[in-house]
Image 1 (cartoon, helix red, strand yellow):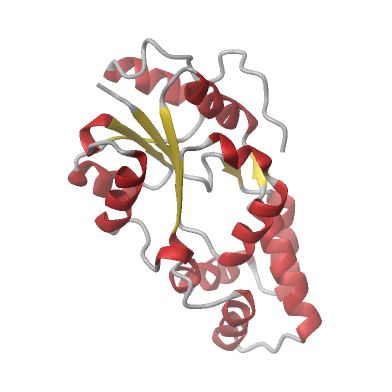
Image 2: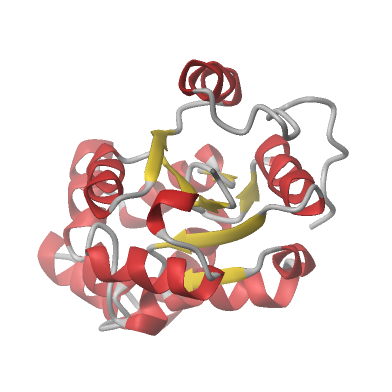
Length: 216
């Protein structure tokens, strides 16, 4: 029996702001493929809290053979935060509806400190979740099984009592190996189909079923 639902944040509860992504590319002067390759190169260290935003973008500049001024780095940090704070309102509304219906809910996210700081300042809806797990504070990140164990412990559930949603297949496979029920998220319609096919959460509100969007 499912007693809890664990949500990834990036590309599940939020959608990547494409305009901010284009702005980041423009700020670096790189072509999109080079930017994306370098953007993810050190992202794991950023998400693990080993780097702050200034250290992350300084490393990006070094790898790209560029030099950023302090003002440019400030603009890159600000735009990067903007890119990851565009909320997927149907998914957030569904998460809150599940919580209101009696399920325990969590966010489990690989996240750098600057985005997290902005979320805590601006997103009162975080209070609707029973457990908030942020990689930069723990020094561990998905797909490390320890971060799934930490989240289940915070929720007070066994792995087999929780459903995990994430957009990345490697994180889904690691969650399943840990014992969680897990579904790869692409969009609300596909999620609704996948839940029905697996017979999960049939007695609870369905995603996209006319929930009232949450206020940021």
